[in-house]
Structures are given as C-alpha cells and as structure tokens.
Picture 1: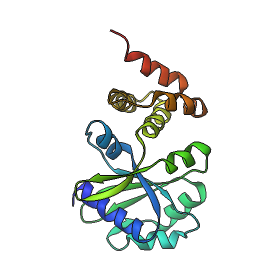
Picture 2: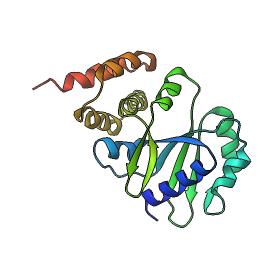
Picture 3: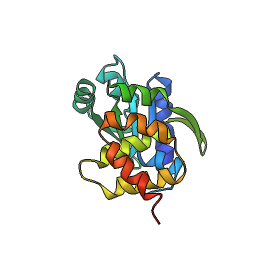
Amino acid sequence: MTELEVLADAVRRLDSAGVDYMVTGSIALSYYAQPRMTRDVDLVVECGVRSAGEIVALFRPDYYISDEDVTRALRDASMFNVLHLASVVKLDLIVRKQTPFRAHEFARRQRVALPGFEVWMVGKEDLILSKLAWAKPTRSELQLRDVRALLETGADVDYLRRWAPGLSVADLLEELLGERHEP
C-alpha cells in the first residue's frame, strides 16, 4: 500500500469510530504547496474520553500499535505511532492539545478531496503557524523552506500576524514575510 492508501484506510477507521482528526505535516504541505518526500503521515486526533484500548482496537491487527504509547499520549496530549504492517508506512497520531490556538486550528480544519477519498485537512495558515513553531527552536531549514513554499501560494497575513505572537513566532514570521519583498 502507498502512503495515501494507508492514510485512506486510517481515516476510514477513525471516521467509523467517530474520532475527529485532521491531516497535517508533509501531506498537508503537498496539498497546499509542493509535494515533498515524507517519512510518515501526520494526523492530529481528538480522542475525547476514549480509552487507549478503544484506539488500539481501531488499528489492530493490520497495524502495530503500542498500548503503553497510546496510554501515555492520551494522558500527556502527546504523540503515538501506528505502523501499517504490510507496507511499513508509519502514522504519527498527535493528540490535540487543549490550548486556545490548537482548539481554533482544529475548528478551522476543512474537508478536502485527495485522490479517491476525502479527509479533514489543517488550514493553510494554521499549517504555516505550526511549521514556524516547529522550526523556531532549531531554525530547521526544512520547516522554513516549507513555510516559504506555503507563503508563495498566498496566505491570510492578518490571520498569521494575529496568532503568531501567542505562539512566540512573530519575529520569525516577519523575517520570512520580509524575504518576499527583497530583490
């Protein structure tokens, strides 16, 4: 199975169980800007009061998933991995954090069509802000290149400027916006 086929299978499982999610990371980047090789598929999930056992049962036996990792991720609002056994495609499931921005970001997700199926996708501006937050500690050139590619396709700059200070990425955002106007 390809990454997109594994994604289609995973979101079908999540949808059937009523688990809200949104696609983010490099799949979202490829949707909005430019395709980029990826090592995994990133999904933000809203698990609510579901138990680790319920989440694990959604994916077994076709996927490797650790009960302990899911329990920890649900408790800490962190991430757990799911590995499709036949294709060795890895899914990173990120439990949605309970912050104002993450709640707003999740509420703005949109239903989009991918080849052969539909998914809930992070909004472009929210993806930009998340990539800035991921890039900030290390100034990851990969993340900054992704942000540049997303900005080149057009973005709601007022929205970006409204949320950037709360994520401590306003200076980095302005730096990248300034690059667009330099000769």
